Length: 310
Image 1: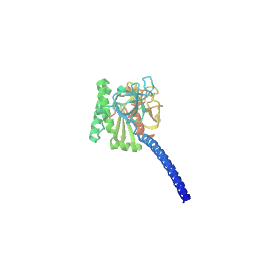
Image 2: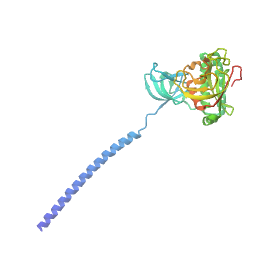
Image 3: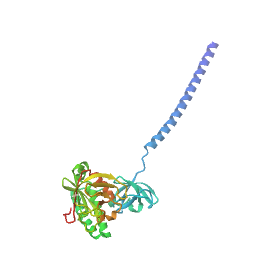
Image 4: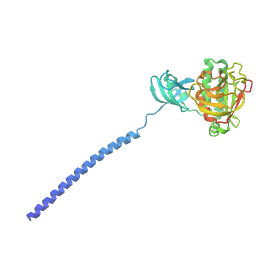
C-alpha cells in the first residue's frame, strides 16, 4: 500500500511539472504572439497611413517662370499661364516644388501661386453656349492686346484666355480630337496672331502665337529675312527640346525653307507680335498641348495678313 501511495505521489508531481511547463510555454507563446501582433499592427498601420494631402493651387501670373530648383539663379525649364492648376509637393526658400496640369514638375515662386482664390480654383462648368461666348471674348480681348500691347489689354486677354482654354478642353470635339489626331488640321492666321486646330472643318482650339519678326509681315522671300512662309504645308516631324531656345515642343514643317516650325518660346511676352526668325511661336504650356493633338503629316495652312480671320 505504501509503495502504491509513493507511486501515485510521483505521478501527481510529474503531472504538475508537465502542466507548469506547458503553462509557461503557453504563456511565453502568448507573449510572443502579442509582440508579433503589435509589430504587425505597427507595420500595417504604417503601410496604411494616408499620405499627406497635396495642396492644390493656381498660377496668378502669366508666362511665369518655372525653374529647376528653388532659386532665381536656377535654370528656367518651363513657363506657365495665368490660372494654370498645380499640386504643391513641397516648399523651400520662398518657392513651391509643384506638378503642373500639363504634367511638368518644377519650382515656382510662392508669390505667383494662390491656394485660396475660389475663382481660379473652382471647377469649370461646361456648356456649348459658354464655350462659344468665351471664344468670342478671347478673340476680342486678344485683338485689343495685339493692337495696344499695354497692361490693361494684357490683363483682360489673359483672363479671357483662361476661361476659353478651360472650356475648350471640356468640349466633345476636343475629346474627339485627342482620340483622332489623323483628322486634325491647323490654320495659322497672321492677321489675328492665332493658330487654330480644326476637326472636320470645325474650329476646336485656338492658340495665341507670334510669327516672323520682319515688320512688313509678308510672305517669306529669302533665307534669313525673318518672315514666316505662307501657303499649305504639313508637319514633317515632332520633337522634345530644352526650354531654350525651343520651349519645349517643336513641330517642324516641310517647306523649302529649312528650320521653319511651330514651337514654344522662352520669351512669352513676344506672343501676339511679330518677333520670330520665321517660325511660329507659342506659349511653352500651349506647345505641350498642341504636341499631343497633332502628328507627322498634319496639314498646316498659313494665311497672310490680308486673309480672313478666324
